[in-house]
Length: 385
Image (cartoon, rainbow, N blue to C red; front, side):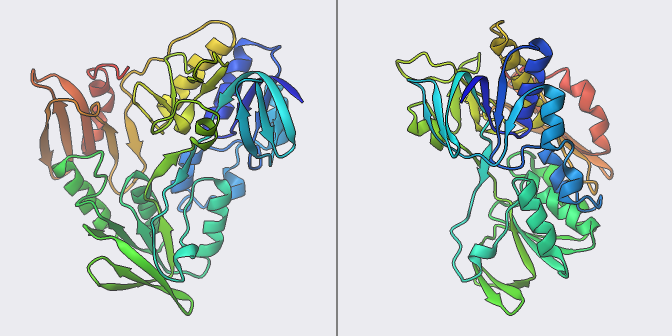
């Protein structure tokens, strides 16, 4: 089999790249390989789908056949890629080898799994794609209490969504606060209080170390020796970029697949036409698994693949946390940036600015009523890259 442009991965990154490339080039042969159904859905919508009454099927925005016809591309669904061969411009798959002219890796990321003890550890769920969500919805049937592992962005979004769905929710995290990598202290405290008012119970500086079956429930032992009971356990610790295929093929990897500003991967001595985008990609030491960076990557790479080499640029891109109990927007400062948070608060929200040594803003965090300043502050933040 042969492909002009071969895209591996049918998540938002892969499908958006196909869509943007087709806008620029109506003739290029595009083949998209999907390990799952091959349709299109927005993964960020999963973490607030329960309260909206959305099933997995209802979250699917375009079925494979319709998407392929719309974009005039070939979509191979249920296909696993097992090896990359940069020296011969081929990939090995579960349906045979495919030769390409240009390869775009949109491999995504996989959930971090805690090393839990106990005979119930294997039944801890994680939700990273649509089939996971379908399994999660089935598991919720007849349940009343859900325990979440992780108080980061996804964990808090699921916690809020589950409360809106009428479930009792406990959240455990080793960090001392919610959204520990995103919010300074006052903003985090306000956020926590709002979600607690909505019924979420947080357990900070605490981790679950074992999950034991107990009839139809689970007994959870934490690192302080305290016992908890629950009906279902959902892990939302975080994600690890999928780099295994790239690393085995000799591409440079760090946290993600390392690319240059044209999103081309480093294949050593071989100037291979291999590119990467989405959750699996790292550029300028940045790995940004958020919608706005992915859209920027897809648009820039589409131009490059269409024959106009285009560097990737990142403007400051705020991240919206989908927690109706506490509207929150964050625009983190660059990692390692010299400066400090300055926070002002009232009963309705917290406004936090990360200022450098010259009092210039490098980032912000807004909760509650302060989120109305999102647009005006975003224009003041320097470009990330």
